[in-house]
Length: 508
Image (tube, rainbow, N blue to C red; front, top):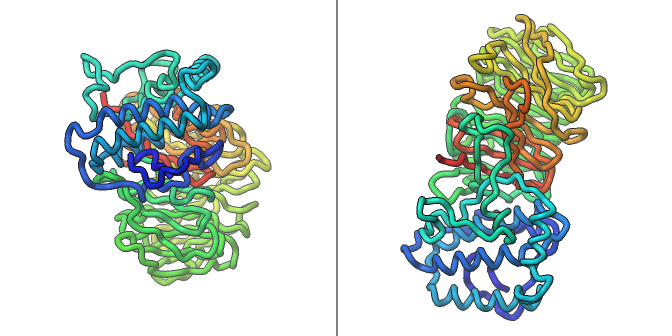
């Protein structure tokens, strides 16, 4: 078998090209297993790397003829692996031999590129018939021959699929957009949870490079993005069913997770050790959790029996007076910044506000808003104030209405008033959204959301028209969650197929 990206021939007898689906995306090949910390000496095989990429892109049109997004994701994933494995320093002669052999094998399977109706001709029709909205690739940023006279990447033939795979940019309607979301490129792909959904991905608090994600396979991954290559530091195992949610403590030293096995677990982030397992007081599936912002000894959880509980993670017991019942399964929780107001959303379409007693942990039910009867509220995100132009406390809500909803908090009891909505695709999946962390310090105010159209969407909440400022494509399943790091240099997104993509802000 030929390793397409390392340049090494392991068994040259045959090659099996993957068809449409996970194999064609490279998702069965965890990136963390195929990376190296070695640095390649300048000049070793860079021309070969360019040839490898070119050949891969030309033949790529055949792999998934009816799924342009899958084709592009394949190119992006393979380009990432090529960059990382090229650092291993394979001898140029061996890499050239591999390139010739690989070209022969691909030619046998798909036909010579020079024939009429070949991959080049086929990709011409693809370029004409589809418009991509993916970010610009940075496949060979270390290769000086890939740069033009003014430092730009070398242009490619309009008929080549490279036009889509290497030179694509995120489409936005107006050139004046927040600098953090103007352009983004794929930085890394984590696929250790492929085949099970990743409902939650979160950067650590005030941290640029630590990331965690939970999966319905029952595990949680702790990842480190720097130094390169990004790695999975620990995989936290112990839950017997899928992990529905997790949260970092304020100091990032512990994580709390909730699971469909009716337990919550406390983990040490340094070594991945499980500190404590706490059963749900009702013996029900736990669906969401959040730390009390000021007192991280208290965690609020929501379960499938319609109850919200305040739990003391030191004692493992429910706080007296810290329970309340909603009208449905509790799917989303969010505190305001001071920790005095808590909002909870359920699968019947209601959002409840609670007054939280800072001294005792007691909950007092205050207000109820019916977003839409029967539409599950899958995400709630609170912000004290949105921007210089919008200084009201705000709530961002996903509720399976094919809309992202922005509410204004109108009183001290958490009553809500709809401010505006943004079009997305969400009718059944538990999609989540966030406020951009730095938006309060610049003009404009952006929010980011997943969507069932397999895209990450950016909206400027202060624009009266053309609020959509960016859309990132690359996932092959509904995007369930998004998370920015503290300085907005990196954005992580997770999807229903188990893939996590880390996007890097394009530097100007």
